[in-house]
Length: 158
Image (cartoon, rainbow, N blue to C red; front, side):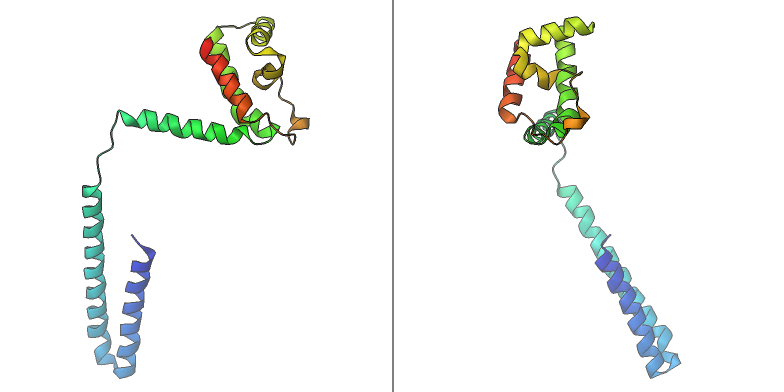
């Protein structure tokens, strides 16, 4: 419900009471009742409009919902790619490392590191390596979209 609707109803009742007091007490109750009735009508019309808008809205496509959610998450990841190293460590590295670990099915840290270096090379592995989080360097620039693109391409090959 709109706060403007509530405010206008409150002001209408208040104005009716003030006018009723100025004209005499015998008019206060009838004017207040008229103002309250007008507010009720306005509220009813507003609720009817809301129901009509909701009924006219297209039903959500359940098959499209996961795709739209994936698209929104991907766009969010791309935005983080151009931020600082701290943002990369907080938002991108966990997802990239998790995807890498799932794809390679590695569990031992030495095997993870050697497989990561083979797949990505030292330059890109430093941005995927889950052990390479450095809180002291969080204000440094991140690798950017090009590095993210290359990392994702190499993850697709696994």
